[in-house]
Length: 302
Image (cartoon, rainbow, N blue to C red; front, side):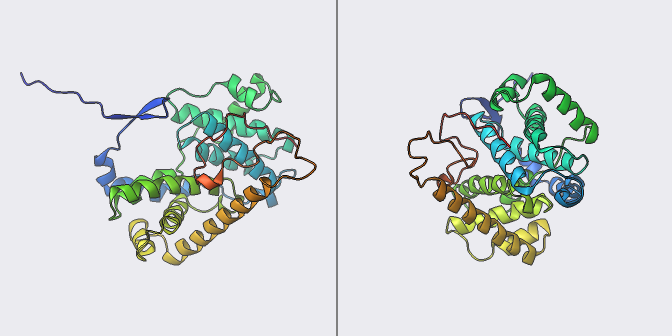
């Protein structure tokens, strides 16, 4: 009888869990990417709900709660897909049901609760999420909101997000491994940053992934001038639309950097106050899913 060696090729992720290596069979099979592209529109928000559904929620409120969600995901070292997936649930819910601004953080917490259960080996607990809201919600309210989300979304939680495209697209680009690793890391950051900006919420995930990759190549000064054409060939997205989305991503990054620099400038009024985080991360590090502070994320208060 032949003896088989069962090799488990896993990598340690921040000391929290182990992640298997990427499956080359899935990456090399074009049907996987084709299925992602043909299904992604199903999970997009179907309307800009600020204008026709929500009566009390404004874009700046969405930005506040999604930045808070990003900080929680960062501090808990959740899988990269948890944050964009939870934002997807939030947007799809807000397309259907009108809620008060005082319940927006509760909705965000419940969306993270569900996304963590779907993607994490060890999901975040309800008690932890209640703590992150500074006990402004109860565990009963959290589980009740979780049930409402499941009902309205019809339990269809396996949404497609920009992160799902990154490995498939980069695998088909002819660059050395070190460049692709750096590009992926920054592209994840830029895609997460887009999730906090409502102007990107109705853009297909594959387009955001392409724009994040294109922006990362520019930011790393390793572009050859053919990246947009390659991204078009791989995904079928219009090259002019990719270029326009890249410009929007770059503008969002500039706005984020400007806001961060302003928040770092002390004034006479707050020079003696304890500094609290106002953005998901230190954007100078260009890593939205990394924690540079042990301070607990501040709850969103309206």
